[in-house]
Structures are given as C-alpha cells and as structure tokens.
Length: 260
Image (tube, rainbow, N blue to C red):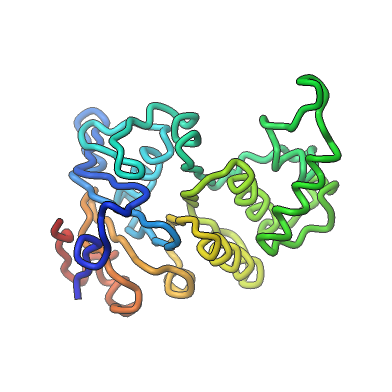
C-alpha cells in the first residue's frame, strides 16, 4: 500500500517540509519536484540507486546547495537554507561520510569543536567541556575509552557516534546521516543503529541514506524512494516488505509519487 504522510499524519506537525524541490546543474536535472515531510521522533530512510538524487537532496537540506525551484518550511514557517550555518541554527545537522572530525584532538574537543565553553569570555572551560561530554555520551549510551582519547584511536563506529553526539550538543532536532554504517562491520553497524534509535527515543528526527535493507528495516519508520530525481514511493516500513523496496529502488517494481 502506498503511504502518504498527508493521510497518516498532520502535516502542520512536520518539523521540516520540502515541496516541489528541483535542482538543476546546468542542463542536468538532479531533482525533479521532490516532496518530503519529516516528523518529530521518527526515523526515515532515504533510498535510491546511484544517481537517484539522494545526496543532492541531503545537500539542500543541509544548506550546502540551494534548490533551483521549490520551498522548504521548518516548523511550518517557510525558510531559505542559504548555508550550513543557517541550517544548524534551525536545528538541522548533517553527518557526512567524512565525519569532519579532527584526528589529533580528543573526543571532548571534537564534540565541542568551534563552540567551546568559555570562562571570562576568553579561556576554554575544560572542566565543563569534559563533564558535559561525558553526560551527552552517557545519555546516548555511547561507549568510548575516555573523553580524553584522541579520535585517531577510535574505531569507525565510535567515530560515527562522536560525530552524531556533536549534533546533540549543538541542539539539533533533525539529524541527517549519509550512509552511517558504510564500511563498518556488523557489530559496529549495530551500535550505530542503536544510536539512531536513541536519537528517536529522545524525540529527534533522523533522515539517513542507506543501501543496506537489513539496516533500514531494523530501525526506520518510513522509507522514501527516489528514482532518477523523482520521489516514487513513501512507505511505512510496517506496511511493506524488503523485496518491494528493493524492487522500487532498482526499477523492477513500479512506483508512483505519493499524492499530497
């Protein structure tokens, strides 16, 4: 059954809504009229084959690129995400695959990178920084050797967790993750999926790109499928099967854009 958020959820409650998003790069149309609604406390998987437009849509929501056409609203208020700073100010954080961590700095320094607490407007309040780092990591059930451990000594899953924890410290309500379990082993990937569930439990919204259907069906509430720049399906995970979603992604199952 094709599921649309307009039917099952009150659109006015959407923490973020995108309408008619078009993105052109010269003569190439990467996105062609994509709609997306994100609600508080849900996990949405953004799916599609290579070239479907997933990364382009994420870059627009992150403020890295601007749409050629279309509108974006946050908490029902139309807004323009001119740059990543504007997106972060509205509570939208994106964890890209490179994670943007500083290898030689420790966990706490990375968590507070660029927003270190100050004493007398000048000196870094290290005691507070390390104390709050421990609190945030504990709240997300993230295990690292120590908040004093240099990031270069962490595993891939631990680095991903640090990058996500930084979005929490910044007060983000929407966390966008680009292939968060890519290149991770089964155990490490499982920890990242647990972290996504912790974000949802805290009332945050998670949008993540993935090609791993096992991971998608383990944690997602909805699956949004793009094909050739258009949204062809918006399914509740509870109402679909892996085989159907795979078919939509590769084109062996027909889909239609969810009506609004």
